[in-house]
Image 1 (cartoon, protein in one colour):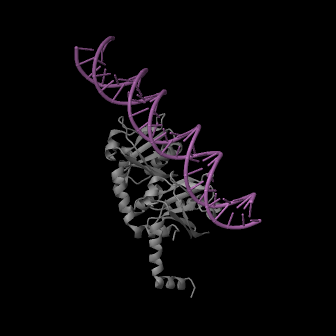
Image 2 (cartoon, protein in one colour):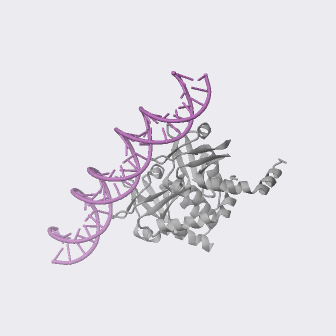
Image 3 (cartoon, each protein chain N blue to C red):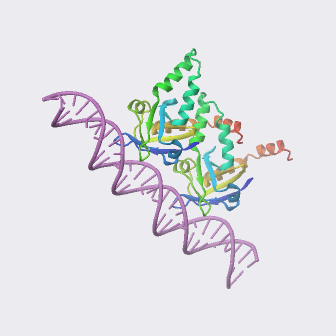
Length: 144
Length: 144
DNA sequence: ATACGAGTGGGAGAAAGTGGGAATACACAA
DNA sequence: TTGTGTATTCCCACTTTCTCCCACTCGTAT
């Protein structure tokens, strides 16, 4: 399970090194896709295979399902982790996620999210400010 | 499985080089057909054979099934990949897809779609804006 | 103080993408 | 049939980008 938050650099060659805490669980082959709220999702290859299988069940005849699978599959990229534990995000994904130095890796259970740091901070503040909502959600999962 | 998004050029001789990530899986012989939403579908020859077989099972009595298979079969074109990994799209398909430089190859699971870049961007933006739909679909495939 | 691991930077070689030339095939007119 | 012009096919070559590997720095632990 991925937890924690790490800030990294995008170097001149557009490489980003993975947080070492995630390296073992991610393995040598990872998949990056478009995520929600302009972040990217990062999965171990094995997790992606499960997701891809689920997605391929969607009905091509439905316009929104078609759009969704186009969005996810075309947005996905299988990436080899280099010998230094870095990944190279394709241009179109880097643009989508607005990834400029610094970027944030956020572990979210089964997946890792990659964020533009500024967007991440803004997003976090917005969530933090919604104390009532947080309290309620905590309640629903049994913490009071 | 085809994933990812690649922008390529249509050269003076109307050739388009295939993204190298797709070359191995596509093989030396591919099939291009009319796709949905004004893009073209590109299949490895082997995949096409399976599709053709499935389509021939469709009920001829149903007008929409008839229309669909006419649409797919009449538009289909078998194309050899040249030694540099490029293909030559027939005029009528290039017109249908409005393919002018630059064009986008989008891997969508078992097919590749070829888009006019401008149309693709417009389409993508429309999908991106449907965040609710995306979140819902993500939920159905187990991402929350 | 030294060793180690994590994160970052850079250089050389390989590959991908694209443009263009030469050879071949084709169509049509003389 | 032969010649001419056009189109198509097959290679070769150039440029840019990517990939792989090595080196350096900084902080932490021994």
